[in-house]
Each structure stands twice: as C-alpha cells, then as structure tokens.
Length: 105
Image 1 (cartoon, rainbow, N blue to C red):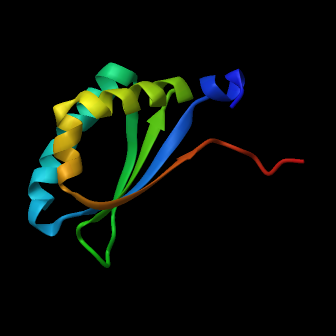
Image 2 (image 1 turned 30 degrees about the vertical axis):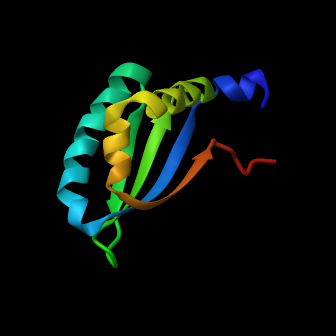
Image 3 (image 1 turned 180 degrees about the horizontal axis):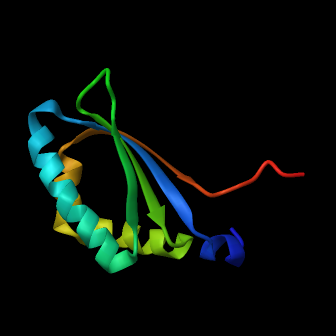
C-alpha cells in the first residue's frame, strides 16, 4: 500500500450477526464504542442498517480518516476490554475495508 493510499480516508463495511440472547447488551455496547472510536480515532459511524430477514443482523458503515487510523484501532482492539465485550456478543462478522473510486474515464 502506497503512502498516498495509507493517508486516504476509507470505509469499513461490517455485516455483524449478533448472538440473539445478547442483542440488548450489544446495542448498549455499540453506543459506547461509537463514542470511543469518534473521540480517540476520529471514526464516524455513517450508517447502521438492520436486516429485515434477521433482526440480529446489522450492517455498519464506518468512515475512517486513514489507513493509519485503522491500524491504530486494530492495535487498541487487541487490548481494550470494551472491544472484547462487543466481540463476545458477536456470532459472526464479515468485514471489508473499502475506498472511494470513480467510474470516470
């Protein structure tokens, strides 16, 4: 990854399947996590969608200021109890980091 790409804003798209019995706990923890990510790393939760077919499946779109910020978040996640508490509520998760492109010629 080039320095230019590393410094560019990106998005993290996460499809999260929450353990049904921990749904209320997960939602409360996400309120706290959203605040922590905004304050510490400048990350914004752009959108949250809930699957209509499965009420415990969420699609989150996080705006991340740079690839470097993403690296810092990953390091913090390994050590921060809040991240571990959120993770304990998750049954499965699919995560993809995406960046803006155009279809211009």
